[in-house]
Image (cartoon, helix red, strand yellow):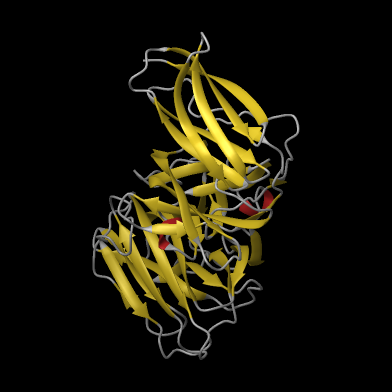
Length: 437
């Protein structure tokens, strides 16, 4: 929405960088050269062993996945003492209350071993040796298969034969509960095509939920790890996305910024996304107490995009000064939704007589005219042509102090320049507008 900003406008800017409910986005974008030690080129930390895993500059690709083909990948294999024995992890904001944690990642296994061994797991932020949500691989005929355990219970195993050298999309779901120390459970979905917009879609493999009754649940989940055990496969992982929402793990709309600008008697909201998949659009919600919310508008999304997209919305319906809260409800094409974080804007109503520029302008054939009157009075709003002939009277009545708006339909008028004039208690202002048919 276009709004002319007058020189006396009061300006407030609030900035918030966020990605709805996303906790980690790891694309392994660490340059164009391979490195035998990923810890030397990244934020990954070795918590066990001395060697590897490797960073490779060629990443994995999977059609429709937003982290496909970005940067490189992590490459790991089976290890022994002092040889390919490095285990590494990355931390993220800890989940400490009952919630689901979704970890989506791309995986390609080139060779596997007869004995199943786990290559990826979660853990608390201070990792130690608390390894939970373990994803295993083993040979199966001419290919390989998956297994899953929460901790040290017998893993749930799939008999589905997966192709060596093929990239798959995996989603590990860790259901974190705080009631007892044995009620966390884990589930794993694997896909060979498509990116489901809701859980679980149509996975090629489903394992779990498993782990209920197995004690030793951690106090939080705050790290993801890659492991090189005695029987770990020779494989690659890329595009790790961790979130407390399914819609943010394999299917994110990443919100880079969200802020508000106080434009005198309006607030302009501005936000930008970095990536979008199946983004239908954004409902804009406002609250005066950060508890009760009202929908005040909608802005259409861009569907699928891997490039930054900018959006804005102007809230014109504010009649008093004070603190206002805003949030975005992002809707996907299939009806799912996620809320952004909440931003606050301190709004100061300018108590001056103002006639605003009509919007849109130029217009055809409908536009809107708004104004602010600091006092209650008899008010008239008239439209004139370029020869000062009165064309129509839009308002001729007593109105209370405050902000007002009216629609002007010029369907019966020819194209040209017109003027509209407001008289409110003896205060008079005029503006020009252009009708183009």
